[in-house]
Image (cartoon, rainbow, N blue to C red; front, side, top):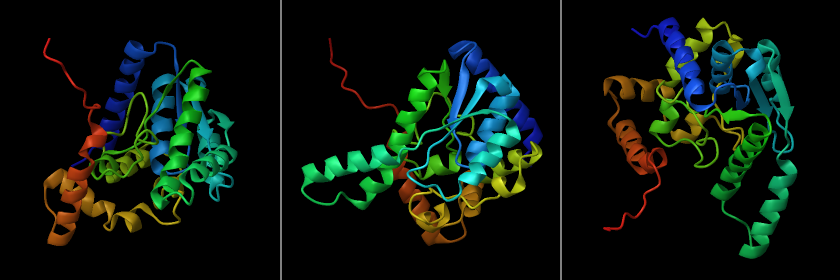
Length: 245
């Protein structure tokens, strides 16, 4: 049985210890999307470090339809906010890339460019505020590679990297975060679809498989296994050549 309160307390202690060793007195800086992962990460950092050491950054690509959810979470926690609109940078960079390509960039290029620009913005804010960047990905997303390498998959430390979606939701509830944010259908905010639409299976099914090894539907199991193997490289250090000297 998952004990959300016990795990929450342990994660708070882990964050404190990490900062003592890797950034004593530094601030935690993270992108606030208004979903469960950034909400729970922000709340954990506030409890671990104090409200004055957590900075939330909203980063719409032009217009973010659910920006009010991000603002709601920031106001709920009382943390400092920066708003960095990556839209102009996205349009300028995409135009330059497509000019060099001599035609439209791929759909995946369009999807992944915004998260990578957002991470650039996060590190800019962080380095100007004595910060450390929070990776907000959870175990379920990492398991099947549902993240952008050097985009939302980047960061200096990862509070949720060992927690499934269902476990993150449970921690959010035990911390008293707004239920509508904690239970909000996860979406990349880029394609107009939910994560589960894009993945082809529900997080509840994935989480059960991760924790128990059980997946009743053989086709879904095969799909999860394939995604897991294909995306393991995202979780590993960059391979490097080691000469025999």
